[in-house]
Image 1 (cartoon, rainbow, N blue to C red):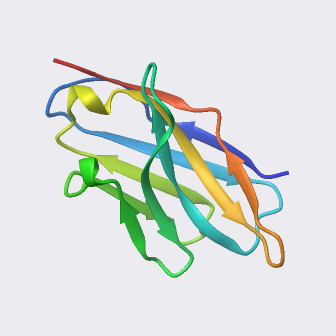
Image 2 (image 1 turned 90 degrees about the vertical axis):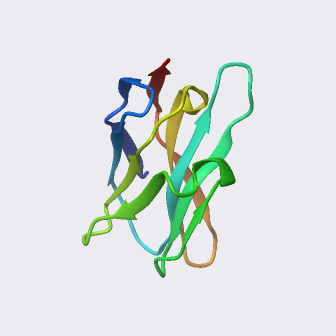
Length: 118
């Protein structure tokens, strides 16, 4: 079972920056998508950013130009650099991982809280 552990969340002022990390362990192979979702209070979980096996990135319109998703060379860690943070970026950020060859399996981290104060 793949386990994902996020870190790096916290409280930051408007305009500040945070860097989230997600470390994966367990049977990791044929990872097709890594990324981040978030959930604000009273709202549904939404996509923030993903990076594909080939390195293609995808961002929510609300974070384009401010957030950057990346991975390490060993491909066991995915990062989310968040700049120019806004109060609407507040929420629980979840690491997401999809892997598999013939059948895809999805994995989620436990979430890390990001709070942007105005």
